[in-house]
Length: 312
Image 1 (cartoon, helix red, strand yellow):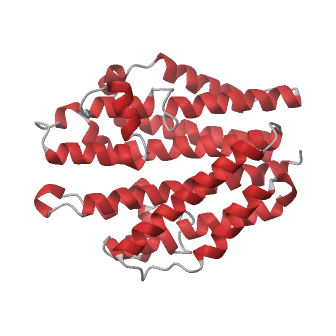
Image 2 (cartoon, one colour):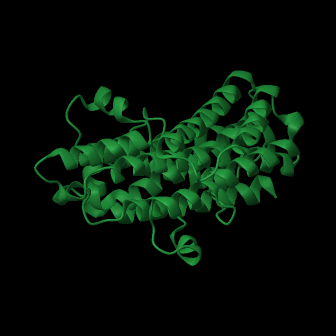
């Protein structure tokens, strides 16, 4: 496979996954912002949403105060923001168009149709319309992911889409935890009132993990168990451990196919081994924020290694 084809497939998956993440972040923020002020606390949840997306400095350079209107525009529709939903779907379609023959017709139809439908949406929507828009974005990502699983040959084209999907998903989950870590610290846990429960469940809803949490732990929502599920539990599709299991598996398949291993395989295997050896009490003892920050750095290093090894 040509490196430019692999690069486009990798980024088709990354941009689609990122659009889904931004939609989930906005959906969770709408829920938290709807709390009465006495419950919501002092933190500006709309600014927290921008921070989760990793674009706070860019936001501040173009907007003033973070509120519903400015954050909705920036994260959903702004062409100034390379991680906005509109820009992600545009870039996913452009990358897909450049490798049209490497995609199945079902995958292309999802992205092309989504781009055409997106033109009907803008920031002038009501709150109810905006919520329906976010649900639509999540359905687009889910349909694209499902079409890839159901229609692609299990060859290098499929492997590079899986690599893009997994590395983006790991980054997204880590960023949610990095922004919310102050809520997850054990010493900050309150008595377990309605605010605590709503915040924990909102984090879980943001990554579609609330039902999975109850299946795994069979008890009320607790902050260290939320962190355990999203960091170390390999059964959870969006956990860091599961994403790296996928990355290691598909990087090994690529290496076997091309007859050569390299830095990307070593970085991914090393990080998976570290996650496998970790326990959540040890993560909290050494510092949750530091652990997540180091993970984000290593995940970025893996992305750069994959790019240098296969995509350039």
